[in-house]
Each structure stands twice: as structure tokens, then as C-alpha cells.
Length: 63
Image (tube, rainbow, N blue to C red; front, side, top):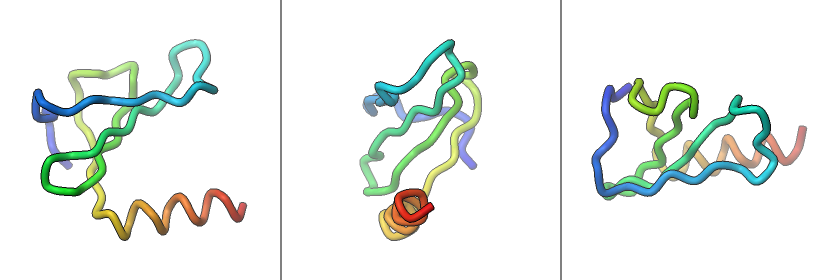
């Protein structure tokens, strides 16, 4: 877990986000994917390798 994201990344929020309870994702310069809670934009973020991220998305699509 990383406490502050690099300033050069661009966060994306789902178009299905409502009432501010959302998750934001962003590609990092090193190829990893960052994830954070939009209610805590300056808080911690999680980062995943590309393989981890694709496995996660694959599981969501099959649920």
C-alpha cells in the first residue's frame, strides 16, 4: 500500500458511481494499477500488477 499517489497520474471513476461512494483507478507510470476510495482522495491507495488487475476484473465479469 502506498500513502500518496504520484502527481502525474489521472484517476478514473466509474460512470455508475453515485452519492460519492466510489472507487477510482489509475494506471501508474511503472505499469501497475492504483485503486483508491474517492471519499479519501488524499488517503492510501492500493496498487496491483497488470496480471493481478486483469485477474480481478475477470473474476468480477464472471460473478
